[in-house]
Image (cartoon, rainbow, N blue to C red; front, side, top):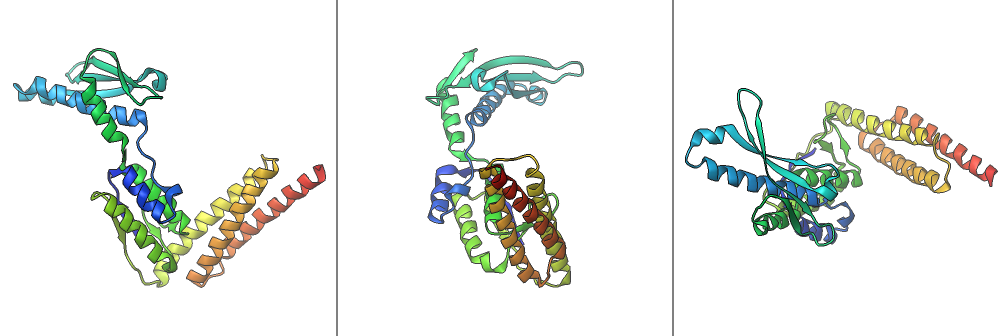
Length: 277
C-alpha cells in the first residue's frame, strides 16, 4: 500500500527529476499567478498587522488579514483587507489591491500603497513552488499510470502491483529529494483473504465505474476521434483488469461483464459511423 505526506516543492527541481524518469507529463503544476499573489498579499497583511499590534498583544487576537478576489480576478486582481473581529459586526478595511500583468508576470498595485518590490519578491518565490495539494495530485496521476488502485473511498491510500514497486520507488525518491516536506510511504502487505477482498472491491468499483462512463459517453458523441479515444480508454481498462485478475487469482466476472458491454457499445458506435459514411 502507498500513501504520503506532501508539502511545498520547488517546481523546477521536481520537473527535472520526473523528466529523467520519463514522467514529466505527470509533474505537478506550479502555483498559478493568482494563487501566488494571494499568498504574497496574505504575508504582507500579516506583517502589517504585526506592526500595529506589537505594542498591544490583545489587538493581535482581534485582527487578521483577508485576501479576496475581485470580479474577473484575472483582469481586476485581488484585494487585501484587515478584519477587526468584534462582538457585533466585524470591521473590514482595505489595505491594498493588486493584480498580475499576464504578459510580464509583474505585480501592479491598483489601490492603496505598499512596497511592491517586497510583494513581488514573495510572489516570485511562491510562483516557483508547487503546493502540497498539487504534489498530491501528481502522485495520484503517476500511481494511475502505474496501474495502482485506490482502496479508500476518501482517497489517499493505494494498492500498487508488486511488479511496479521498483519503478514507484524511484518516483518516491525523486519527490523526497525535491522537498524535505515530502514523505512517501510504502507498506508491503501479505495478500491474504482480507487484503485480497479490499483490493478486489477497489479495482472492481474503479473499472466498473470507468467502463460505465464510456458506455454513457457514447450516447452523446458522434465524432470518429471521440469514439476512438473511448476505445483506447477501454483497451487500457481491459489491460488493467487482466493485471488484477493475475494479482488476485480472480476472474473478476462483474468487471468483465461491464467491459464487454462497453465494447459492444463501441462496436455499435463504429458501425453507425461507417453506415453514415
